[in-house]
Amino acid sequence: MKPSVGIHEDVVLKNVTIDKNGKLVLFIRSKEEAKPEEEVNPFDQMNASEVIEESGDGGITFWPFKTPELKDKKTNQDRTEKELGEFSNRDIQTMKNQFQQILEQFMVKDDIKWSIFDGTGMDKETYWQQIYNQPILDVIYKNLCEQFMGMIAPYLDKNEHAVRFKLVRQSKEKHFSRVPGMFIKDNPFIEPMSVPQKDSRVKWTKYELAEGLNDGTPVSRDTADTTEDVPEADENAFGSR
Image 1 (tube, rainbow, N blue to C red):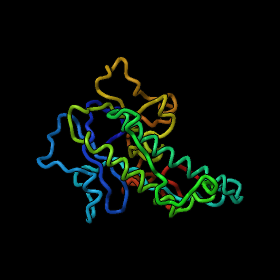
Image 2: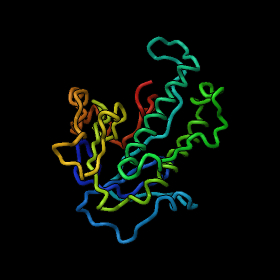
Image 3: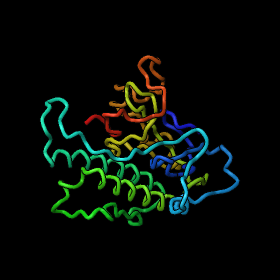
């Protein structure tokens, strides 16, 4: 199943892998799609000494973190350490919240354990001075991905764990799909299919409708990036900085 913009019914989380470029990719399928003959445990995959790739229609990419721009593009002023740290902190929090919401569909909260700063050498006193540095961000991204993969593994590719799943348009200019990242506590993007449609909380928000984020129609070829869904060279995968 190729992930597309929309609210999808009866979706099964099929697999989660790390691609050859080090990005976490979540693959989904419809409940009706046949399961593969051989099931693969992504937690074991992650610890294997090989490059992990998934064939097929592509998946939902969770992009690695990127150090914010040191200057504010609007004012051309240098950003303070606190400002840089706040950008990175927000990006990390967004992804952690996305993973958390997915896991909460299958696990009780007390069983969801995170330890995302392992190996960073950070502490409370140096947090804002270190959090935006690329080597630190790389470690945090790796920790988040590995821990998410380990916790989600028992619930993958099982029809009994089908969900309702919303994917939004990346931006007005880019029709590629992505997982919502803003205000997802009040506007969840995923819920069990045991929730009746009439009671569903997975809905389009006023903002998404106003911005056309519910429409996956490609823009004209002269304005669209027709290659892989990647951030621009000077842009953060989580938005403009």
